[in-house]
Amino acid sequence: MRRWEQKILDELAVSKRTIWKLLDAINFPLKDFIAILRKLIREGMVEADEEGLYLTEKGLREVDGRNLRSGVEICPRCLGKRILYDGELRRLVEEFKAIVKDRPTPILEYFQGYMLEEEVIARIALMSLYGDLRNRRFILIGDDDLLSIALSLTGLPSRITVLDIDERLGSFITSVSARHGLDIEFRRYNVADPLPEDLVGGFDVFSSEPLETFSGLRAFISRGVACLQEDGAGYIGLTSLEASPRKWFEAQRMLWKMNCVLTDVIRGFSIYPMNYGEVNYEDFIHRLVEGLGITLKGNEGINWYKSTLYRFEVLGRPRLIVPPDKRLRVRFIDPVEDITQVKLRREKN
Image (cartoon, rainbow, N blue to C red; front, side):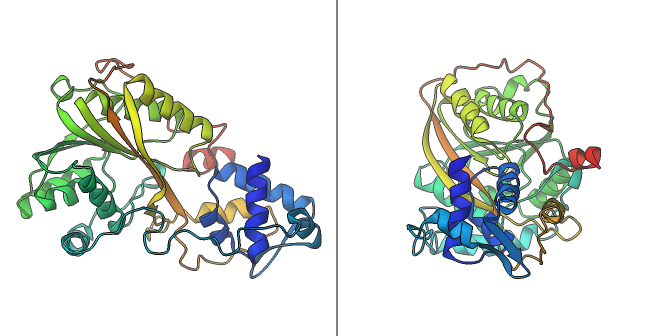
């Protein structure tokens, strides 16, 4: 916790920050961010005005002038992704945007959201670097991001299967696939249900943005790995805001138990907008900071919600720790750690 407290102090030592800029800079759970900020304000080290948060004289003494944060930034070209793309992939962004512009609106209660279209293509670019596209069979568990459509537009995968509980997504994907001559199979599937037998061990690449509860991570990751054949590869996204270090540990330990090795952990790889028009997740930030005495203005265009990309490979055959034919109990809320879930906030109000 002390390391995270120092992170906030170091950021504010560089300059005054709005809540949105501070959220963009942190790499730890939102619940702890609010708790630490409350503590720093209570102890008189941080204050706020209409322009943002800043260090008091007491806070500046805590930093002690020895701050290397000034002049250090994430690469402004790749934004920390480690890859850049152009040419055919840049054209693909525009085609993908045009096709998905009428996609279903996220459902607030499911905490649905989707990454920016450029981020979807960035994932495809990374897959291309690893040779995970051409003639590969893909299984996607959950596809709010419509990665399946972008993958099919490349014409490279030999099979793309989407498992998702949302029938609206299924109808949209099926309709787009028919109109544009794509080849995407959609199956309505609840990750708590047993995995269809014909999917086990039938794919080369698995991709998912899993539900970030302990039971959700176990369900999504175990189902995905069960679908992989020998030497398969997987891509999953985990946030720092929603998933605590303990959850990261559990996800990594689960992969290790299943004969998987991490090849890449790229922080902030995927960027998610938080305002989808009818659904605006930034409303909960306004509510969270009300009790801190902070005057919060609208977001000045900061895309602060990001997920870290895990890429892993199976060493030989997957060693399954959850039987594919077993029904699982999946919780949508971890009450001790979650503060963003709509249902949880309603229960507390």
